[in-house]
Image (cartoon, rainbow, N blue to C red):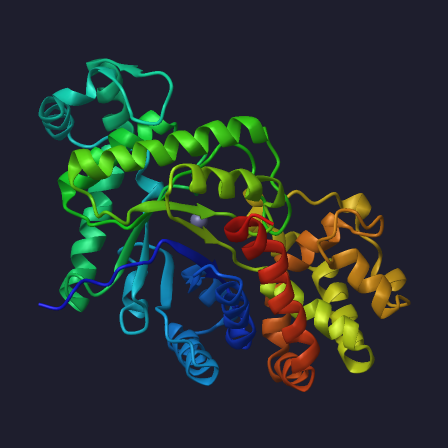
Length: 420
Ligand SMILES: [Zn+2]
């Protein structure tokens, strides 16, 4: 048997909605390597994104492979079937080697009473005073609490086991990185819940390498974190400690790490993430997603001429269909309709005005987070334009790529992995 596929310590999830920016994204990882830190790219795309765009995972695979070859990247890289379940996994089997098993729908649906009881009984060490190395004070847990957590999460973990088994049948064990995600749900998981969940995952035999809990605070798409940064920091550090403890206690894979489904651009928590990861000598996977598409628009707007005209047209269309575009993302966006400029006003904008409103520079008084979020969910508009959009991306490749690489490296990789 060959050695199993192992996700290295630091990795970044990148989304490339139209499969045109793999090279520019990989370039950011090359800049990281040049700066002395290995950050492995993982191209992630969810079933929802594929459905909206009308694309197939094979296209993402081709784009990633071509970028890797062209830039001579000789480190690992992965393709993530993001947020899949038993119903949606099959189309990803040929192309992906990273699977985010999304079990959020089963959170809160109780497992069988017998299974819950058996779980609680088989983990006596989860009861009483549980001291986790690296944390100042112990957790006090009783049987009733373990039972309540099992009632909330055991069915979800069992579901992850089913999806995992299904993928193993198709791809063979050890040939892919399994992640379990619980982020797309209402209530965050506390560190002690995470510990209990990891015990249950170990029981199912899923060799998870990353786990994505829901953290405290709001992770809206493409804009900064909204929440209590100090509380997030405490929780994040406790999660790291709980994971390190669970690896030893339950024999989970040694490289198991947290996966932060960031929704991109959570600038105010990047420093705490960096510091905590260093403090605990832990790994981390940070998923970003749709902001590469926004950098494409910024690049086109910056290019002027046809590029700027198309960027304005996309805004006008997105504005006209804002309700329908926002609906699937209602829980992760916060648009103030009163702050959206009219398409007539935008049609008169210069390149500079357009990019200032869209580019995520909170210090720029012209930055408009409502416009940014609307365009963020508006990729369907560009998808419908098809070759009109894609041809302009190709024609303006240099200016688009500069924005894509710069955004990923300067605004994400540097603060998260280099601490700058
Ligand atoms: Zn997620």
